[in-house]
Image 1 (tube, one colour):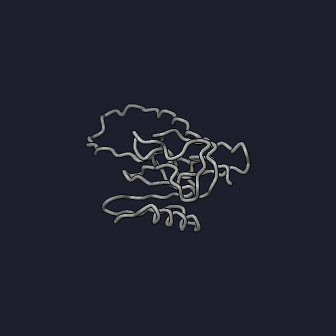
Image 2 (cartoon, one colour):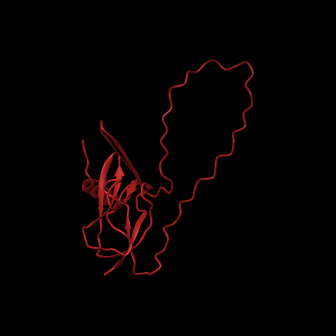
Image 3 (cartoon, rainbow, N blue to C red):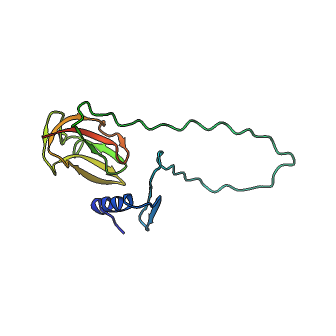
Length: 162
């Protein structure tokens, strides 16, 4: 089974309009888990099986260590001008400003963009997903560094609409 960006976007929009709290889609190739209302990203761990032996005659007393404090997500900076519009990430992945390391970025600050123009790429599960501007205007800020991981809904760029 394969799923493309548009199908994933449709699925996310459909789930957003319901009271479903968790959705899991599995196939032989991948597993997709969507949780609504979760502040922290899911933690995935894979551990090898552990052999269990008989307990010792006297069990040592173990005091559990205090768990580390949960990281608090940083809120997206508010635009300096209230009319600015955010271009946000439609998925979790890695942000790239250019189609290849040795090529020019898709857009620069102060550059004008049109609706449908590719402004960056988000790499997710080894797939390069072109992110297009949904509004025409001038790029006033690029909020993410090249090669930086991004979360779903994270602001990538601010646009001053025309």
